[in-house]
Image (tube, rainbow, N blue to C red; front, side, top):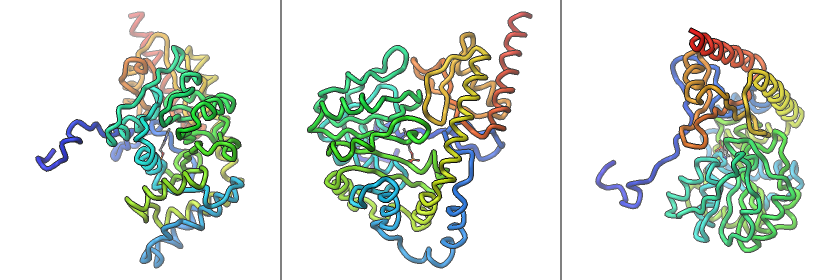
Length: 358
Ligand SMILES: *Cc1c(COP(=O)(O)O)cnc(C)c1O
């Protein structure tokens, strides 16, 4: 830290992303990326857009992509905002609506705490239940801005549409942000409620279900007045926040519904298969509707499993906090990757049992 940094940021703890290893090749199941390539049309943009067009700034309104998204979700472009990843949009929301105070689950996406700290907000943390599910009733009538990852991270547990509506209806004077980063893998989206609740802000990303984590592309869907607020934040910080290349890849991705459907179906099938195999091996897990599983073994610590896997070339995510340290979060990769993961895990358990008997 230099002596020039604003004193209010001295104790700010920045977000720590999952490891992106540069040396050894791992089977990478630690940051919930897609194992599949982006839609073929999106990949083709790399050749077309990488050339001359990069000379020019992108459309600061991103109108081409907003129109495509509006069409796909039966909305208007005025209902859509684009971000440099959905993290960008979360930041705009904390800027725009943080003044009312912010409430979110004590265990959720780690960035919420960082954005709150960055904006100088002391968040109201609502504890998850003993079984790591969200207690929807605890969010009723809070008089604060509410931020919910649905499905939640790192548990994958989701609220139902009825539970979400209860939260929207009892907080009519506050924005309820639903971070639907993982909603394409089987949970219910709040989208059908958008026409009836002007306090609903849905945030989505191309990073998980659309295989474009590297392109940094996210979007929000909300009432036009809410979008206008967020646009004000966006244009006051970085009006060219989405690159020309990412806009083009986003459009191509939205156009190819068949590819999107095939990829998410494969992830859901592989999730069910992997969960079944893990249960046979004695693992317990949350009821994840995301592209990851959150698993624990009755006889082995989470750290021990994480390190064992890492030595064998498989990266998963371990969170060293009191309620999470027995668990590991494992992204659902391609079927072949999961087979390698499962056999390494079997080896680790066998080695451990061997040691126990010796
Ligand atoms: C991955 C993730 C994000 C961030 O996505 P980007 O669009 O890549 O910034 C936001 N929220 C949750 C819950 C996530 O898991």
